[in-house]
Length: 171
Image (cartoon, rainbow, N blue to C red; front, side, top):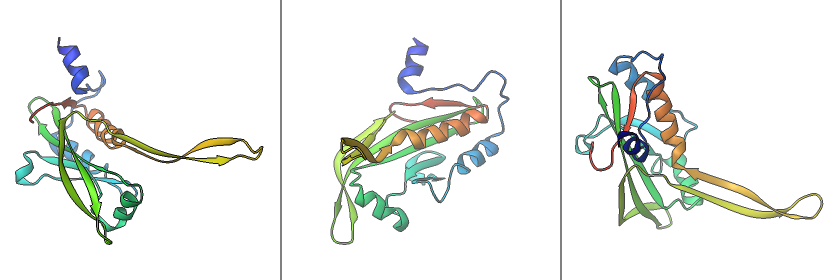
């Protein structure tokens, strides 16, 4: 039953030869995932968020806001993480809100649609254009995939020798 639960929650284990690093080095590895060119960031959790770290999409940052508005991204996703040094694991819980963009200067308004657990959101947009032979073909304009953020976080945790444990209801 535990393998089934691990599969349902997205729990991943490090390779068999990887020694677990101290908690501070795992925290540093998670902060190293940050980058100016990435549409998400890792930060310290607020006291109300009940975790150690939070990874979230940069929807409200001015440099990224126009990108998210232009693409009409209608979901805001956040991954809360709690580090457990005794078990060498990072517990994660995803939260997702449905949002709408309002006004001439776009700002977010959240709706009542909310989800939590282990979530995956994928949105994409296609356009049709003609190739050199005159045939119509479909071209991907953009792709928004929450697995990009989560995959980078998991890679950092597993590389540090810790377990990534997905949680469904609470950390």
